[in-house]
Image 1 (cartoon, one colour):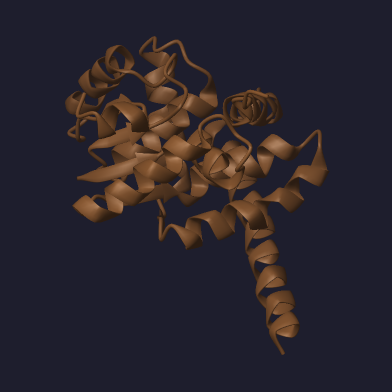
Image 2: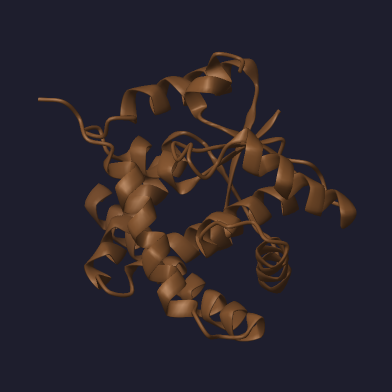
Length: 57
Length: 158
């Protein structure tokens, strides 16, 4: 079975969705949204850090 | 050489079943060996992985996998100013570069991070022709030129 270029399809899909979300917003508003979105990644990083620490113990 | 990785390469490195997984792994191995500095932009990744998951929030739970990939390959996550990034993205758009916002955002991020080249599996949008147009605009603004190609072509020295 040949492998699929999932990476390409997924990247395209994610970008389409992100663009849809920001469409119509000013640059300042887009920057605000991006800053808020960054907090989600920080939370996920923290969750991974805590849970992997517990699993290691 | 400072190499900026597009999200398509990060995803490929995270999915062993992906068509580009093997070449992406090989690229990282050789890039490390020859001393290339490999980077991504935090804000551009957030754009793809968080805003891109707006309709399918379950995809947010894939983010730790991508973060692990960055850690495994010691890929540096660098920051740019949010507003500066979006302004440069808009500038490329206004100047007539016909790409999706997210693609332009990665061109802007790699330029602001003063990278030499963008490595992407999306050859349709990240190629020499587009990079020349992007660089012309960047140069007028006192910013660095950028090149764009696939990881495979970087390995082949093309």
